[in-house]
Image 1 (spheres, helix red, strand yellow):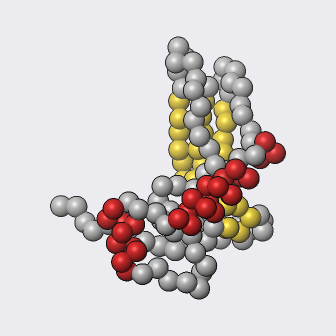
Image 2 (cartoon, one colour; image 1 turned 90 degrees about the horizontal axis):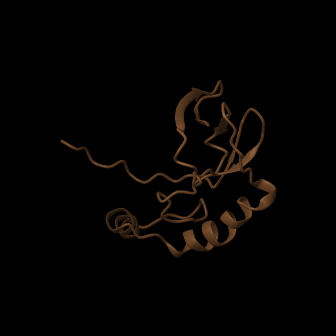
Length: 131
């Protein structure tokens, strides 16, 4: 039997790595249903609407996609890899907005994922691709 879905959890948009002090954006996914001040609450009715019907608050589009995503994916923050045989690319999924791009399907592509525990607690999710 399938259990109940976990309840919504408030997450900060800006995360700070405790070890380095590095700030990163968090939450660019379809799971974000509202962007709000941390002092505000979301009503039960809104949570039900987001959860049951897949709605999202207008704040998501306004802040996340109209403002932050274009900034975060600007040329100064973008890396595009030109593959050669034997290349290995590794990225930190907690600090990287990444996407697959079209590739020549005549060649094999292998993707791996691993999870690494932080000394300060929590986890880092590393993605790797071998071309």
